[in-house]
Structures are given as structure tokens and as C-alpha cells.
Image (cartoon, rainbow, N blue to C red; front, side, top):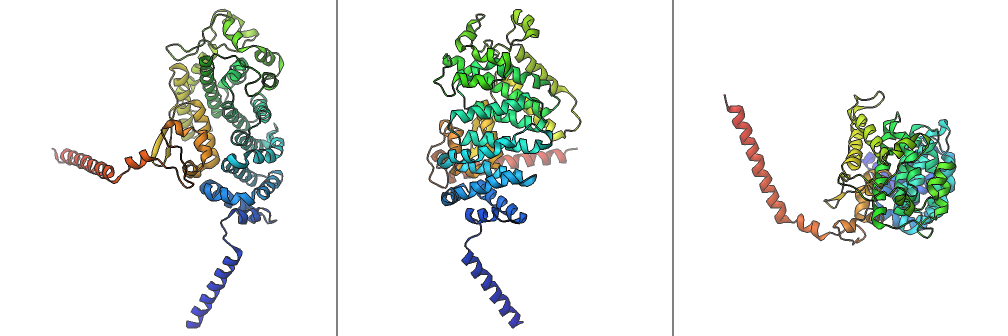
Length: 457
């Protein structure tokens, strides 16, 4: 027995010495080496390791990326070209998390390197619907977090609109709608106002689509459009070629055809003056300055003085979604989630209510009450998943994207977590003790009432 114990101790010492010579295993350098291996199991382990490190340890990941960025990008490009199925999905997830981590340092480099690989994957072939969905989601998120060039923004928007308007599978169309809504938050309000008719014409047919996801995403994009048009009306400025994307560039990727050219060719000031329309919301929250897309079949309604027919169609379609008895092929959980989102859209369009969303930062609940913030927060959740809390504490990119400084949080990041004096005061020992005592009294009161009820005849 003593000899066996000595042999086991010697073996453990040898393993520990080999591990020390090889260096720590949970590092970017180690996982990038795994990505370049020929064995599929090694590549899968490398993808899982990189993804976990980028999502859950943003501070360590950013420090380790300084000497490994080019190697990691090269490995990702190879995997995105070659891998299929789940491995391709994991590679896209790593690229999305990398874009969030490196957005403020090497963001443009990440986008420029990965865009030529991801764009060809976004096809309309039904057999490649899975590739298209994840590639388009990854491309739009990288464009949002990393890209600073208006030309590339216009190209990705055009790609999204092509998948929204074309005959594609439901999953790529949902990804295109979600990506379009995210990128639309980057545009200036006058630019969106100028393309209003084309945007409505693109989304309106999808309100009666057979897919619940397509319906809800289209409705949320129209609610976002309504919010942006309200901001454009407050600014009172006509779009110009000097603001962000040039006007002539936006007209090239609206919809194509006569309707897109007509809507893009109109000036922002002329739209509100055509029929003497007002540009602000009324008491019910509806913007009566909005005009639906005109076509041969809608001239009669437009002549009757109803420029808000698309809003009525949106409310009517979502009211039917809220009151139907469910659909085959969807779980109760999915239907419940989609109805909650549809309820928020109806409340925003009909009653002028703002969407309610919350995010917790250092035990402080922050309310996000605009559709633009809702779209951005969903993109952060999709890219980071269970690592969102760690990035909210340590990543200044999310701090700027969600504009947390304007919502009551201090704007100081000490490298590991966000410092908030109000949070520290709220969670002081004295206040915690007071809350504990009050909760104990309330709990005792409930128990006494329950006992009295059970003991009564």
C-alpha cells in the first residue's frame, strides 16, 4: 500500500509539473491553438473555451487578446468557411462575443476581417437557411458594435431588406427583421423619416404572416419606426446628404423599383406639407403626420383622409394575435412570450405607452423605456447570454450602448466592476438590517393569519 501511494504521488507530481510547463489552460492562447487543430473534438473544445472566456471574463479576455487577435481572426475565418451545422453556429457565437469585447479597441478590424466571410453565407437558398440565419445575425451585430463606416452600414441594411422582402425561410427572415431593427437605431431620425413609406410597405405584409416570430418582429420594427418618426418631428430637420449615410445611398437599398425610388426621392419637409398633415402625436399617442405607402389599391383610402391606415392594420392584426386560441406547431411558452411582445406593441401604437424592460447592474435595476434600447439590449443578450452581467460590470461598450450614465449610474469603471456610490449606500449594513427586520415582521404576520384561519371552525 505504501508503494502504491508513493507511485500515485509521483504520478500526480509529474502531471502537475507538465501542466506548469504547458502554462494555464484557460487562456485565449490555449483555446486558439485548439481551434487550429485537425481533430474536430479539439476545435469544438477551442470554440467552447473561447466562447466561455469572452462571455464570462471580459477583463481577462481583453488583456489576452492583445497578442492573439490576428491569430484568432484567422482561425475564425477558416472555421466560418469550412464548418457546418453546430460548429458553424458556435463559430458565429464566438465572433459575436469577440465583437462586443473588442469593439472599443479593434472593432473595425474585427468587422473588416469577418464581413467578407459572413456576407456570402447569407443566401436565399432554403437548404442553407440555418447558415443564413446565424450568419446574418452575426453580421448585423458586428456591424452594430464594431463598424464605424457608413458605407458598410448601408450594405448590411440592404442585405437585411433583401431577406425581408424576398421569398426566404422564416428563420432567416426573423434574423433579417431583428438585424434591421438593431441597425435602424444607428440612423439619424431624418434619414428614417425620408424612407418612411418604403419601410412601411416592406413590413406591412408581414403583419399577417403565418409565423408568429415574423409577425412580432415586424410589429416591433414598426413601433420603432413610430418612435423614430416622433424624434424626427421634434427635431424638425429635413434629411441631408451630410448627416450620416448620404440620401442618394439610402435610396439605392430601400426596396428597388418605382415605389422605393419615389419614397426615397421625397424630401423630409415636403412629406409633411403634402396634405397639410401635422407631425406630432395626438392625445392617444398616434402620429397623425405619418402616411402609409401609396399604391394603386390604396388611393381610395388615402383620398378619404386616412393616412394612418397602416397603424390601424397593425393594431387589428395584433389584436387578433392576442385573442386567437393558439396555433399548431408552437409551444405554450412561445405563444405566451409572443403575446406579451404583441401586447407591448399594441400599447405603444394605440395608447402611446413605452416598452418596459429592465437590466440589473450591481444589484441596481435600470429601466429601459424606448424601443431603440429594447433592440440594443436584446442584441447584447443574444451575444453574451449568461455573461451579460459580467459585461455590464466591466465592459464600457455596453455602458455606452445602453447609455447607463444617463440613467443614474456613475460612469466610472475601475477595470473589474462598476462603482456606484448610490448602490453602496442602498446596500449598507444598517439598511439591510432594517429590511430584514421588516420582512421578518411581515412573515410572522402572515403566519399568524394563516394559523388563525386554519384553527377556526
